[in-house]
Image (cartoon, rainbow, N blue to C red; front, top):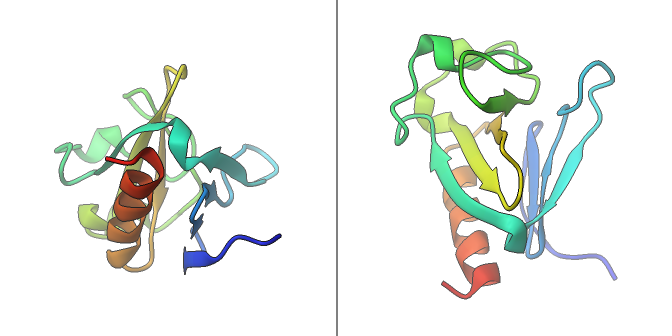
Length: 116
């Protein structure tokens, strides 16, 4: 049975159970699917006060965040950059959204999945 899609754009898909980060893995740009219940935290680059050198178009910059592909990331507001921490993984995951409501939808879906 297919889960209802709560939000979708060219960077991510959010369902009631999973976050799919598109163009995540280097060099083939395949997607990474994360169960919402495995996510420990959801933040924006703005909330984390990430500087220019803490962001990257694809890969890992001078931080412990692996960013999915987005060549325009440095030209977008930091409120459109999401960062999640996943259980038992040292490296956080970074991604962009086309609309800031994508981050809000993710936070709500995550809280609902975790019963927070």
